[in-house]
Amino acid sequence: MHCPEINGLTFDQSSLDALEEIRQKKELGNLLTTVLAGSVWVKIFIGRTGLANPFGIGWTIGKTQWGVWSESMMASGLIVSKSISNIARSQAATHSGKEFKFWEAMMYGCGH
Amino acid sequence: MAAVTKIVIMCCLLSVVSTSGAGETKDDGKELVQFAYAKMTQALEEADSKVGVCMEKEKNTILPPQVFPKLPLSKSEWGSALVYLSFKAQTRCEENSLANAVLAFSQFKTIEKEMTGKNSPDVYPAGRYKYEFETLCCGSLKTELRTEMEYKKIDPKIRQTLESIPEFKQPFNPIAALKTLGLKPSP
Image (cartoon, rainbow over all chains, first blue to last red; front, side, top):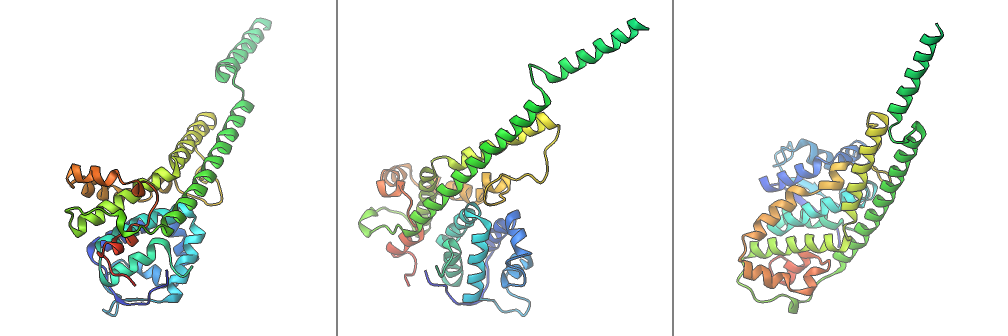
């Protein structure tokens, strides 16, 4: 699938819980300090106030960020990717709008 | 003096016999640990490979509209059902390879502790990637349990109908399925 450009993305409690379930993976922790360091993903996973970024507007996730995410998934191994895909599909099934786009792109990655 | 020496030697021999158990030696122990490690590596490589193949199948399998029966399900029930059935299909496709990897990992940790007295903290399940035990065993456990709980609230007769559909027993893309049903926006 193509990588969606998502502007003004905010998360509801269910999405925040799912992000937390993903964040708890130690393998992701290692990636946040290496492949993902300095990216919007660190802010999303570690910031976790999640509802909006510090400027009070939603997150913006563009092609570059999705590219970094795909790269990190490849580095983490298929079993980690599968776990994240399982969490993402469940969220995609229950959301609409920007959150749906976000979780759908998280499900199998995008741009490849 | 000679008697004391004999007693000391006897004690030493007894000690060696008792610590090595039923014919075990230190070298045996090392070999067992190495063998368990090799088995774990193999199980993990197999699981990794199966998971990759099944994910690819799932991603690319977009079920046609005629597969979906007309059922009195709400949008969220369809969501729970298709996500749950996709998890089940995934596990079936992986042929218990992940469960085997978890078992091999547990066996390695057990034998390592039994033979060396401790578990080395820096030994992960081996393979191309350093997976954590929790990821191998329960990578999306909360999500899977929640989905199953929701699915089990659906009328058993409807569940039976869904579970009898052959296409749902093979990996399929559940979000694409929801799009086909018109329950999610298509691009």
